[in-house]
Length: 353
Length: 267
Image (tube, rainbow over all chains, first blue to last red; front, side, top):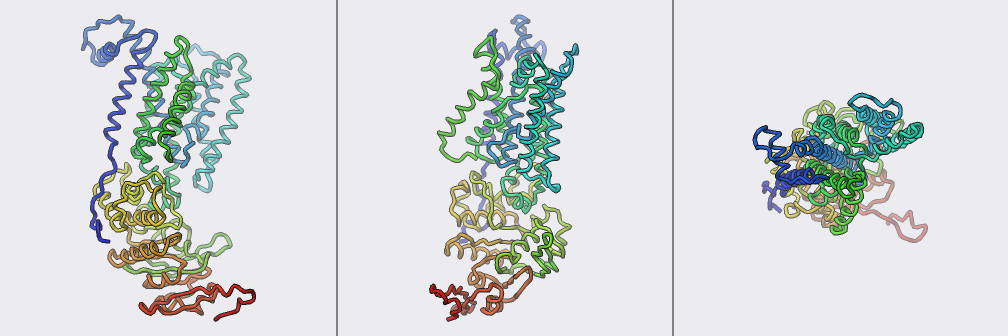
């Protein structure tokens, strides 16, 4: 009975996390380089390296490549790959957060109405505003505003007596989402032949990505990811009933609000620059959970990394598979991610969530 | 250690606790008994700071209302009646959740947190199972995991709400022994609710009988587990004998003969 009473230290559970994270970082960089290398013009990976290095530290390497290649790498492909990576990590991290927050394996980044709010904002920008001569499109700004307003409405409607129960929050998300979708359909019909542009935006993707979009989303993503990863540990406590979590000293409602807002911010930023890309936010967290276990402390950072790699690959496939035609990246994520996920589920044959 | 004065809890017109006074000293194990809806869980919830109340709750001499949730969780730990255990989390991960009130905002686990978890696992005999997912454990093991989680909080007061439910007699005895040891050796003030009157009478230093939101009786097991008193409170006939070995009362519920009309048969 007395065995181990005097604090025999138990082996640390943080087994494979750091090596896994480093490996994932390496993989994401490799995938990114590969994605920059492939395209209508094939550029060898060493040349890609050289061009990027030369840009970072000018004059480091004597250029032996035509200037057009540098333009393709630096102004066309690199921003696109980086944007895809950022959006992928945002959607995956937000998805993992919401799955934990709502204790629901079906939760995805759009569960709080972000997608429908952003869609309505984008539709209004495309349909109602005259085509601007401005160099900057108003679409991302309005999409972002729509997303944030939708989440704010869901929060206000989902609140009960200063508390934030998960069920009312989800129901408010569904209700606000359907309402805004209906409005959006109406706006689209009013839009006449601009409906095509709206649909193209809704399908989502990274066509014509620029550094401007990258800088647009980066601050939101960094701030949101920091909040999620820092407070991710407490998502473990939220896996318990609210009362148990409170008895462990956690202010459940404040924590839930903080995480919901963090997730909504990065999702809104992602949607504003890339449209609505499904599946990544749902499946990538489950893939990471299958491999590395359910502890949110490690799950969140690893999911953010895996989401980046997954999205870069998906976008690479989207623009090269049927080249010169581009497949919407959402089609690729669902088409590849779905079967792959089912394959892993079958192999594991155990509970995932 | 724990002092409850004039505790009242009402939901609208429904009064659940109508003025309860209770003191539990360090190292003391108090058994809380009473019929369903007597207010046992409500009492524990109020002490743990997760239910509304009027009156006064003093935890280690401090007004419970003035303590933050975090401070309170370092002094009072609860083993809930139906705890949730996320099935894929390992035993060690679940027990580490008990360290939540000690971790900083980033949740970095320090060596003393791992030491506390190791100690809690040792006390509950779970060291060998540390890395097993809790979904794979038996009912008795799961109950011990929840107790270990509470111990990892390093509380001064431990509240257990029906910890013996759904356990076979061997596991009931194990849990009782563990809880008694925590009171004796670790100096915890322990309150335990249970329906098995004989077990409570054997385990507890003091028994409190709660009925309709008031304390109907309080004292040593022999003073409270008495036939007349139990019949009044439960409205059920119970036979009570002293255990020849310990002298503590043993209560046997009289179901009555199966034949019709035999209800009044007191034997």
